[in-house]
Length: 275
Image (cartoon, rainbow, N blue to C red):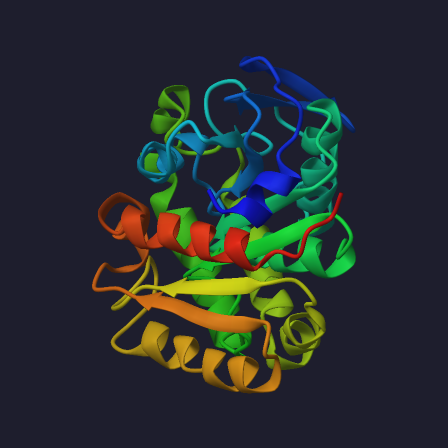
Protein backbone atom coordinates (compact mmCIF):
# COMPACT_ATOMS: atom_id res chain seq x y z
CA UNK A 1 0.00 0.00 0.00
CA UNK A 2 1.28 3.48 -0.83
CA UNK A 3 1.87 6.24 1.69
CA UNK A 4 -1.16 8.17 0.40
CA UNK A 5 -3.33 5.09 0.71
CA UNK A 6 -2.12 4.52 4.24
CA UNK A 7 -3.36 8.00 5.11
CA UNK A 8 -6.91 6.81 4.46
CA UNK A 9 -6.65 3.63 6.50
CA UNK A 10 -9.27 3.41 9.22
CA UNK A 11 -8.70 2.47 12.86
CA UNK A 12 -8.33 -1.27 13.16
CA UNK A 13 -11.70 -3.02 12.97
CA UNK A 14 -12.41 -6.63 13.95
CA UNK A 15 -13.22 -9.20 11.33
CA UNK A 16 -17.01 -9.46 11.03
CA UNK A 17 -19.60 -11.50 9.21
CA UNK A 18 -23.32 -10.96 9.61
CA UNK A 19 -26.53 -9.46 8.31
CA UNK A 20 -27.17 -5.78 7.60
CA UNK A 21 -30.79 -4.67 7.53
CA UNK A 22 -31.93 -2.21 4.88
CA UNK A 23 -35.45 -1.35 3.71
CA UNK A 24 -37.51 -4.57 3.78
CA UNK A 25 -34.56 -6.95 3.57
CA UNK A 26 -31.20 -7.91 5.06
CA UNK A 27 -27.87 -8.46 3.32
CA UNK A 28 -25.12 -10.96 4.08
CA UNK A 29 -21.92 -8.97 4.64
CA UNK A 30 -18.29 -9.96 5.21
CA UNK A 31 -15.72 -7.48 6.53
CA UNK A 32 -12.10 -8.64 6.75
CA UNK A 33 -11.38 -5.97 9.36
CA UNK A 34 -7.96 -4.63 10.12
CA UNK A 35 -6.55 -1.09 9.80
CA UNK A 36 -6.13 -1.13 6.02
CA UNK A 37 -7.70 1.07 3.38
CA UNK A 38 -11.36 0.00 2.97
CA UNK A 39 -12.29 -1.53 -0.38
CA UNK A 40 -15.95 -2.25 -1.09
CA UNK A 41 -16.66 -4.85 -3.78
CA UNK A 42 -19.86 -4.64 -5.83
CA UNK A 43 -21.01 -7.84 -7.52
CA UNK A 44 -22.25 -8.62 -10.97
CA UNK A 45 -26.00 -8.46 -11.39
CA UNK A 46 -26.78 -11.97 -10.14
CA UNK A 47 -23.36 -12.90 -8.73
CA UNK A 48 -22.23 -13.31 -5.13
CA UNK A 49 -19.42 -12.01 -2.98
CA UNK A 50 -17.47 -15.23 -3.47
CA UNK A 51 -16.50 -14.08 -6.95
CA UNK A 52 -14.02 -11.64 -5.39
CA UNK A 53 -11.98 -14.15 -3.41
CA UNK A 54 -9.03 -14.26 -5.83
CA UNK A 55 -8.81 -10.47 -6.05
CA UNK A 56 -8.92 -10.24 -2.26
CA UNK A 57 -6.23 -12.89 -1.86
CA UNK A 58 -4.03 -11.08 -4.40
CA UNK A 59 -4.31 -7.78 -2.51
CA UNK A 60 -3.79 -9.47 0.84
CA UNK A 61 -4.37 -8.48 4.47
CA UNK A 62 -2.90 -4.98 4.14
CA UNK A 63 -6.35 -3.87 2.89
CA UNK A 64 -9.76 -3.94 4.55
CA UNK A 65 -12.05 -5.94 2.24
CA UNK A 66 -15.83 -5.56 2.47
CA UNK A 67 -18.10 -7.76 0.37
CA UNK A 68 -21.83 -8.47 0.43
CA UNK A 69 -24.53 -10.38 -1.41
CA UNK A 70 -27.25 -8.27 -2.98
CA UNK A 71 -30.95 -8.68 -2.37
CA UNK A 72 -32.05 -12.31 -2.89
CA UNK A 73 -28.53 -13.25 -3.97
CA UNK A 74 -26.42 -15.95 -2.39
CA UNK A 75 -27.73 -18.22 0.34
CA UNK A 76 -28.37 -15.74 3.13
CA UNK A 77 -29.43 -12.33 1.79
CA UNK A 78 -33.19 -12.00 2.03
CA UNK A 79 -35.70 -11.30 -0.70
CA UNK A 80 -37.19 -7.85 -1.24
CA UNK A 81 -40.02 -6.03 -2.95
CA UNK A 82 -37.49 -3.76 -4.64
CA UNK A 83 -34.68 -4.93 -6.94
CA UNK A 84 -34.17 -1.58 -8.63
CA UNK A 85 -30.87 0.15 -9.31
CA UNK A 86 -31.69 2.81 -6.72
CA UNK A 87 -32.15 0.03 -4.17
CA UNK A 88 -28.67 -1.26 -5.07
CA UNK A 89 -27.25 2.20 -4.36
CA UNK A 90 -29.05 2.35 -1.02
CA UNK A 91 -27.51 -1.01 -0.17
CA UNK A 92 -24.01 0.42 -0.68
CA UNK A 93 -24.73 3.19 1.82
CA UNK A 94 -26.32 0.77 4.28
CA UNK A 95 -23.36 -1.62 4.25
CA UNK A 96 -20.78 1.13 4.68
CA UNK A 97 -22.78 2.76 7.47
CA UNK A 98 -23.21 -0.56 9.26
CA UNK A 99 -19.46 -1.17 9.16
CA UNK A 100 -18.61 2.39 10.24
CA UNK A 101 -16.78 3.18 6.99
CA UNK A 102 -16.90 6.76 5.78
CA UNK A 103 -14.55 6.58 2.77
CA UNK A 104 -13.66 3.65 0.55
CA UNK A 105 -12.49 2.57 -2.86
CA UNK A 106 -15.41 1.00 -4.74
CA UNK A 107 -14.66 -1.91 -7.07
CA UNK A 108 -17.47 -3.16 -9.28
CA UNK A 109 -17.77 -5.85 -11.92
CA UNK A 110 -20.40 -5.77 -14.69
CA UNK A 111 -23.63 -4.44 -13.10
CA UNK A 112 -21.56 -3.59 -10.04
CA UNK A 113 -19.37 -1.33 -12.20
CA UNK A 114 -22.39 0.81 -13.03
CA UNK A 115 -23.34 0.91 -9.35
CA UNK A 116 -19.77 1.92 -8.45
CA UNK A 117 -19.70 4.67 -11.08
CA UNK A 118 -22.98 6.15 -9.89
CA UNK A 119 -22.03 5.92 -6.22
CA UNK A 120 -18.65 7.59 -6.81
CA UNK A 121 -20.37 10.30 -8.84
CA UNK A 122 -22.92 10.99 -6.10
CA UNK A 123 -20.38 10.81 -3.26
CA UNK A 124 -17.10 12.38 -4.43
CA UNK A 125 -16.26 13.19 -0.81
CA UNK A 126 -16.57 9.54 0.20
CA UNK A 127 -15.20 7.67 -2.81
CA UNK A 128 -11.43 7.40 -2.68
CA UNK A 129 -11.51 5.99 -6.20
CA UNK A 130 -13.32 3.52 -8.43
CA UNK A 131 -12.26 0.40 -10.29
CA UNK A 132 -14.77 -0.61 -12.98
CA UNK A 133 -14.35 -4.16 -14.23
CA UNK A 134 -15.84 -4.85 -17.67
CA UNK A 135 -18.87 -2.70 -17.08
CA UNK A 136 -20.15 0.91 -17.12
CA UNK A 137 -19.74 1.30 -20.87
CA UNK A 138 -21.92 4.13 -22.27
CA UNK A 139 -23.54 2.47 -25.25
CA UNK A 140 -27.09 2.18 -26.59
CA UNK A 141 -27.32 -1.61 -26.65
CA UNK A 142 -30.95 -1.80 -25.53
CA UNK A 143 -33.81 -1.56 -28.01
CA UNK A 144 -37.22 -3.23 -28.17
CA UNK A 145 -35.81 -6.31 -29.86
CA UNK A 146 -33.10 -6.67 -27.22
CA UNK A 147 -35.65 -6.24 -24.41
CA UNK A 148 -37.72 -9.08 -25.90
CA UNK A 149 -34.59 -11.20 -26.24
CA UNK A 150 -33.73 -10.62 -22.58
CA UNK A 151 -37.20 -11.62 -21.39
CA UNK A 152 -37.15 -14.74 -23.55
CA UNK A 153 -33.69 -15.73 -22.30
CA UNK A 154 -34.61 -15.51 -18.62
CA UNK A 155 -37.87 -17.38 -19.11
CA UNK A 156 -36.07 -20.17 -20.95
CA UNK A 157 -33.48 -20.37 -18.19
CA UNK A 158 -36.15 -20.81 -15.50
CA UNK A 159 -36.00 -24.66 -15.41
CA UNK A 160 -32.31 -24.36 -14.57
CA UNK A 161 -32.26 -21.28 -12.34
CA UNK A 162 -35.13 -22.24 -10.02
CA UNK A 163 -33.60 -25.54 -8.74
CA UNK A 164 -30.23 -23.82 -8.30
CA UNK A 165 -31.60 -21.19 -5.89
CA UNK A 166 -30.88 -23.39 -2.89
CA UNK A 167 -27.18 -23.43 -3.79
CA UNK A 168 -26.96 -19.64 -3.92
CA UNK A 169 -25.71 -19.78 -7.51
CA UNK A 170 -28.87 -18.15 -8.87
CA UNK A 171 -30.96 -15.42 -7.21
CA UNK A 172 -34.31 -15.99 -5.58
CA UNK A 173 -35.96 -13.72 -8.12
CA UNK A 174 -38.53 -14.51 -10.77
CA UNK A 175 -37.61 -14.59 -14.45
CA UNK A 176 -39.50 -11.33 -14.96
CA UNK A 177 -37.71 -9.67 -12.04
CA UNK A 178 -34.33 -10.66 -13.43
CA UNK A 179 -35.33 -9.46 -16.89
CA UNK A 180 -36.59 -6.15 -15.47
CA UNK A 181 -33.26 -5.62 -13.73
CA UNK A 182 -31.32 -6.37 -16.92
CA UNK A 183 -33.51 -4.07 -19.00
CA UNK A 184 -33.11 -1.28 -16.44
CA UNK A 185 -29.35 -1.76 -16.74
CA UNK A 186 -29.66 -1.25 -20.49
CA UNK A 187 -31.54 2.00 -19.93
CA UNK A 188 -28.93 3.21 -17.44
CA UNK A 189 -26.15 2.29 -19.87
CA UNK A 190 -27.44 4.45 -22.70
CA UNK A 191 -24.87 6.96 -23.92
CA UNK A 192 -27.14 9.84 -22.92
CA UNK A 193 -27.59 8.43 -19.39
CA UNK A 194 -24.16 7.05 -18.47
CA UNK A 195 -21.79 9.44 -20.24
CA UNK A 196 -22.73 12.41 -17.99
CA UNK A 197 -21.99 10.25 -14.94
CA UNK A 198 -18.56 9.23 -16.23
CA UNK A 199 -17.78 12.75 -17.40
CA UNK A 200 -18.51 14.12 -13.92
CA UNK A 201 -16.38 11.61 -11.98
CA UNK A 202 -13.88 13.56 -9.92
CA UNK A 203 -12.05 10.65 -8.29
CA UNK A 204 -9.34 8.40 -9.78
CA UNK A 205 -11.15 5.80 -11.90
CA UNK A 206 -9.62 2.82 -13.65
CA UNK A 207 -11.19 0.32 -16.03
CA UNK A 208 -10.18 -3.31 -16.42
CA UNK A 209 -11.70 -4.55 -19.67
CA UNK A 210 -12.29 -8.13 -20.79
CA UNK A 211 -12.34 -9.56 -24.30
CA UNK A 212 -14.93 -11.59 -26.14
CA UNK A 213 -18.55 -12.26 -25.27
CA UNK A 214 -20.83 -12.21 -22.25
CA UNK A 215 -24.01 -14.11 -21.38
CA UNK A 216 -26.65 -13.33 -23.98
CA UNK A 217 -24.36 -11.44 -26.38
CA UNK A 218 -23.79 -12.40 -29.99
CA UNK A 219 -20.73 -12.21 -32.25
CA UNK A 220 -18.85 -8.97 -31.59
CA UNK A 221 -21.67 -7.18 -29.72
CA UNK A 222 -19.71 -6.96 -26.48
CA UNK A 223 -16.56 -5.65 -28.14
CA UNK A 224 -18.55 -2.90 -29.87
CA UNK A 225 -20.01 -1.93 -26.50
CA UNK A 226 -16.52 -1.74 -24.98
CA UNK A 227 -15.34 0.63 -27.71
CA UNK A 228 -17.59 3.33 -26.24
CA UNK A 229 -15.10 3.68 -23.39
CA UNK A 230 -12.59 5.46 -25.64
CA UNK A 231 -14.63 8.64 -25.79
CA UNK A 232 -15.22 8.67 -22.04
CA UNK A 233 -11.49 8.38 -21.37
CA UNK A 234 -10.76 11.17 -23.84
CA UNK A 235 -13.19 13.53 -22.10
CA UNK A 236 -12.25 12.92 -18.46
CA UNK A 237 -8.56 12.84 -17.44
CA UNK A 238 -9.44 11.09 -14.17
CA UNK A 239 -10.52 8.00 -16.10
CA UNK A 240 -8.01 5.61 -17.66
CA UNK A 241 -7.75 2.06 -18.91
CA UNK A 242 -5.67 0.06 -16.46
CA UNK A 243 -5.70 -3.20 -18.44
CA UNK A 244 -7.30 -4.95 -21.39
CA UNK A 245 -7.17 -8.68 -20.62
CA UNK A 246 -7.76 -11.86 -22.59
CA UNK A 247 -10.51 -13.31 -20.37
CA UNK A 248 -14.11 -13.05 -21.44
CA UNK A 249 -16.68 -11.21 -19.33
CA UNK A 250 -17.64 -14.15 -17.14
CA UNK A 251 -14.10 -15.31 -16.38
CA UNK A 252 -12.33 -12.02 -15.73
CA UNK A 253 -12.39 -12.17 -11.91
CA UNK A 254 -11.26 -15.78 -11.96
CA UNK A 255 -8.48 -15.53 -14.53
CA UNK A 256 -7.34 -11.91 -14.45
CA UNK A 257 -7.68 -11.16 -10.75
CA UNK A 258 -4.11 -9.82 -10.70
CA UNK A 259 -5.05 -7.11 -13.21
CA UNK A 260 -8.02 -6.09 -11.06
CA UNK A 261 -5.85 -5.97 -7.94
CA UNK A 262 -3.31 -3.91 -9.86
CA UNK A 263 -6.00 -1.38 -10.75
CA UNK A 264 -6.99 -1.11 -7.07
CA UNK A 265 -3.37 -0.36 -6.15
CA UNK A 266 -3.16 2.18 -8.95
CA UNK A 267 -6.26 4.02 -7.78
CA UNK A 268 -5.10 3.98 -4.16
CA UNK A 269 -1.79 5.53 -5.17
CA UNK A 270 -3.59 8.36 -6.97
CA UNK A 271 -6.05 9.20 -4.18
CA UNK A 272 -5.34 12.61 -2.65
CA UNK A 273 -4.78 12.61 1.12
CA UNK A 274 -8.02 13.21 3.00
CA UNK A 275 -7.63 13.25 6.71
